[in-house]
Length: 206
Image 1 (cartoon, rainbow, N blue to C red):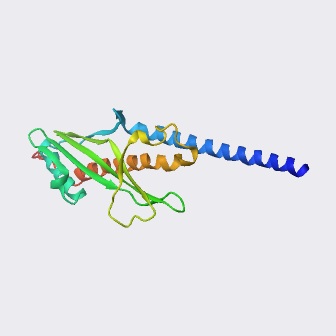
Image 2 (tube, rainbow, N blue to C red):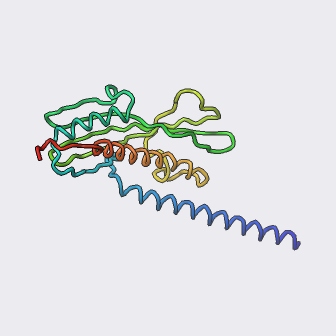
């Protein structure tokens, strides 16, 4: 009888510890997600990252030309990436993607992501604006991913914490998809900004 009571108590303690750990992980995810959301706005399910960068005494044309060069350096084929450009308006619109590294889900499964970005650069004298928009994320899961990417497209709302019915044991794996979207979008923003600002020259005769 004592052994039975001890077993019941031990089970209750282990169950309580597991519940506390699960709740702690959820709180960490939610806290991290709230911090991420400070860097973008949500518009009809899309994530929109935007930043205005001042560059004193630099002409619109100079910024525009530097942006074109930046696209060609970041992406292998800028002709495929750049969807439209208007030098008079100082606007460049492009579309490119970033692939994730392979992540381990469990002993039998691994996964990877692909994220497409719609990129817009608007140049004006003395400043420019970068806008990166993400509508979805691609995911491929399997036991062997040595072949070219062949994933499926998902809405951002398909993942936790948007997905309220996600089982606790799957929440970290689900959230990792959104975390990848956030990190690669921030990297794209940073790469474009650094590329434009690098060795930028003023067209003013000063």
